[in-house]
Length: 269
Image (tube, rainbow, N blue to C red; front, side, top):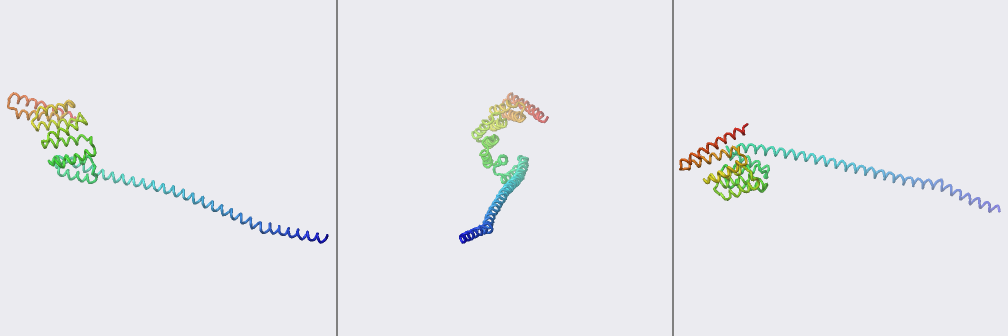
C-alpha cells in the first residue's frame, strides 16, 4: 500500500510540475505571442488610418490646387481677352474716324482688328463701308455678307448692301436688300432715305419724295430727311422747263432747307 501511495505522489508531483511548466513557461509565451499579434494589428490599423487621412488630405490639397490653378487660368484668360478687346476697340475707333477722310487707311486698321478677331461684326461692317467709300463693290459685298452670316438680323448690313447695289445702278437688287431691312424694322429712317436717294439718282423723283415722306412720318423733325427732300426738290427745279413749276420746286426746296436747319438746331440743344 505504501508503494501505491508513493507512486501516486510521484504522479501528482509530475502533473504538478507539468502544470507549473505550462503556466510558468508555456502560458507566458502564448500570451506574449497573442499580445504581440494584437499589437501588430493595432499598429497596422493605426498606419492604415494615418495613410487614409493623409490620402484624404492630399486629395483636398489637390482639389484646392486645381481650383486655384483654374482661377489663375481664368484670370489670365480674362486679362488676355481684355487686352485683345482693348486693341480691337482702339482700332475700330480710329477706323471709324477715318471712314470719310481716309477710307484706305481705315481698311488697314480694320483688317488688323479682324486679324485679332475674324468674327468681329463691327470690324467687318465698317471695313465693308470703307470698301464702299473706295468704290470697291466686290470686297464691300463680301464683308457685308460675312456680317450677315454672323448676324442675319443686322439691318445695317442689308442697308449697306442696298447702298452698294444702288451705287452700281442695280436697282432690283438694291430694293431687295432695302426691303429685307424694312422687314426687320419697318420704321428704319436710314433705309427709307437710302431708297429715296436711289430713286433720286434715277431721277424718279416722285418715288424719292414718297420715301422721304415715309421717313418724316416716323420723325417729322429729322434733319437728314428734310435736307434730302430739299436737295430732291432742287434737282427737280433744275430739270424743270416750266417756269412756274420750277419756282414751286425751288420754294419747296427752300422750305425744306429751313426745316432742316431748324431740326439741326433742335438736335444741338
